[in-house]
Length: 524
Image 1 (cartoon, rainbow, N blue to C red):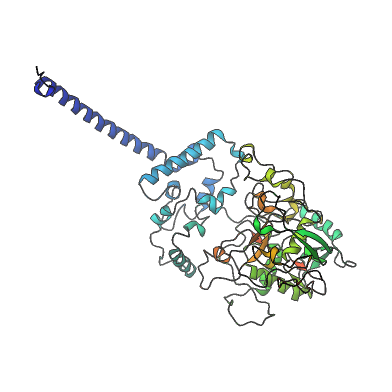
Image 2 (image 1 turned 135 degrees about the horizontal axis):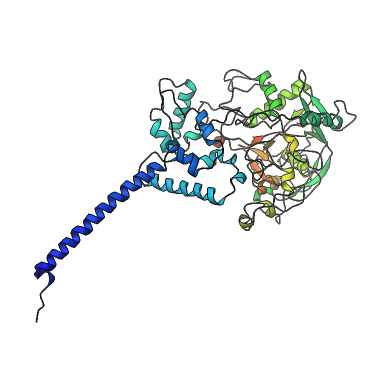
């Protein structure tokens, strides 16, 4: 027996039609309500007032935005928070990023102590890339070659187009949205007292081989030079040292002649004096020059001090070539033999008679973020923070030298604040290239493409401020945003944590036969 189906029953057919109609109608109404409510919600949470008062907790964000060029443009257009800090599209990425950043800020406001957040470090380029969007810049600045654009701006934008995908707008315009002005040089009242004390420890006319003060002729600038005694040490790190890199070995016995080395890194006061005396107004990198000529740097592209102030802070962003030219100028000015330290001299001075990872007590595993347990328990900052400006205590910027303790030989900031150029060409296998036996006054490879850099910086993890840690210049990478053709040989556009200190030789240089990697026996 066949039962009638619902399709054969007119009452049931009408019931299902009404049910379908109301379901569709309710869906449409609910969708419209959600869309309308969602739009209202999006609009309400996208205002500047909401950003400043309800969600965000960034100190001085409003004040620095009002001071910036983006607050009110020449055309009268005001740039709002979401114009820079959300993608310039209206697709899924826009809503995803709004949710991500909103959740992050709400979490910070509810569960974090905002007084302990390192706001200074969040102004860095690496951090800004996580909340500033290239598409947002392009949405407003579609014409990169306006009639009012300067020659420098045209060169910069042409370079940006050629390096598409490798450069961001904020590589050059990092502080456009929030103008924080020029910071003071942090000259304090205690500086004069410190200088008087150093005058006692570093006389201008010492007897014999001793610490002394070098006064740059024609100025009042003083360079404190520390006398480093002749001696032997083990250069490099043993295989058992935590976080050791392959280029730090094998460990070699090295003997060095005595020399003087700068107590601190060359400061902006000193480097600006060189620039004032030797700086050129134009570009003369490829002009014919005599071999011993001292040339002068061209103007930097951008602000070489990063807006942190100059004064006693270490000079940075100059190239290895510029640092070497500075030492030539200092030699000619003083009549003494100044140069960059060799890699061996640098490590010998940094160790100051010690043979551990640092010249102070401690294991790199205690201090580094790379150790997995420290990510939960926090890194130990004592005693390393008493001697070294590094990523945990620097607020990601350089500092004047007198705030930290020196190493046992009286040298300040050997392991941090700014990384330092050395005289040697870099080779990953440099130590193994020397002949067997004790190496005397090694000078490194005869040639190369990049130079050795030693010591960590304000950006470094504790692993990279070990005495044996090695690095090298990265010329092409550090000139990425320089739009000039040819690129400058005086300034790095993309390296902000490398400086240098000077070495003064004895009257006779410490070179001996076989100090280069020429296969001759060492120590004879």
